[in-house]
Length: 345
Image (tube, rainbow, N blue to C red; front, top):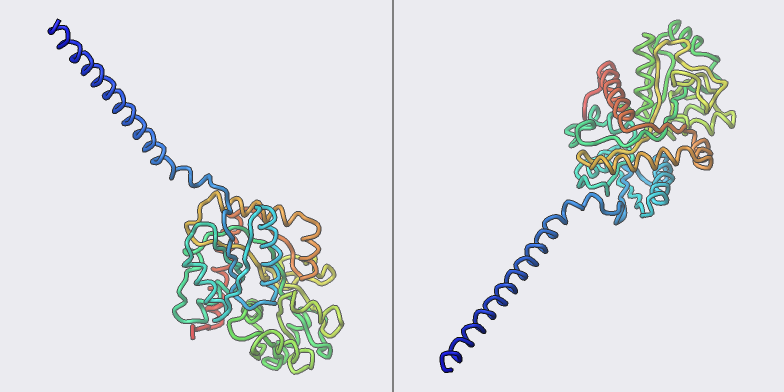
C-alpha cells in the first residue's frame, strides 16, 4: 500500500510535466506566430491608403501668377479625386531655384510635388552653381498645359506678318528693338531662337519682368516682343497690341486666326509649359495614380474653360510622354543658350 502511495505521486508529476510542456509549446507557437505577423507587416506598407496626410505642392514663384493659378486648380483636383488635401506652398526666389531645390531634396514618398515651368531648365544657364539637375533629380508625372509664345508688335510699327518683320530687320539691321523680361528669360530665348534661325539683327532691350516690357511696347518705345500668351492676350484682345504670329508649330486654339511663325520660318517652335514633377525615387504606383488624376481632370469641361480663360491649353499624357518632352526642351534650351552666349552669373 505504501508502494502504491509512492507510485501515485510519480504519475501526478509526469502528468504535470506533460501539461507544462504543452503550455510551453503553445506559448512558443504563439510567440512565433506573432513574430511572423510582425515581420510581414512592413511588406504591406505600399498598400496603405494614399494620401494618408497632406501633399505639399511647391510653386517656385510668388503667389498670384499664372503658375500659382494653375497649381491651385490642379491641386484642388488631386485633393478631390484622391480624397486627401493638397497644400500649395509658394517658395519664390532666385528665379525659381529656391523652390525647385527644396523639391529636389524632399523625401521621395509622394508627399512633395513640384509645379514646373521652363525656368527649371533655364536657370542652370544664367545662375552659377544651381544645386539641382533637371533630369537627374526629378521624375516626370505629367505635362499639364502648354501655351504659345506670341510675336506681338506695337500698333504704330508697320508690320502685319513675320515676312514684314524680316524685310524691315534686313533692310535696317539693328534698328528694330525687342523687349523681354530679362536676359535668360523665356521671352528672351524665344527671340534669340528667332534671330538664330533667320540670321536677322534685332536689338535686345531687357526689362525687370514682363509687365515693364509690355508697358514700353504699348508706348512704342520698343517695336516687338516674343511673349507668353497668358501675358499677351489681354493687350491683344483690347487692341493695344498686334498679334503677328504664334510660336507653336501649328496655329493655336488660343488665337486660331493668327498664323504660326513656322509657316514662314520652318522648324521654329517656342512655347511655354506647365507640368508636375516629383523627387527622383518617388514610387511608380504613386506617379501613375497622380498622372491618372490629372488626365481625368483635363477631360473635365469646367477645367478646360478655366484653362482657356488663363490662355493655356491642356496636354496630358503619360509620364513617359512628359519625360521625352522635358529632355527635348532641356536640349533645346542648351542650344539656344549657347547660341545667345549666355553665361551663368
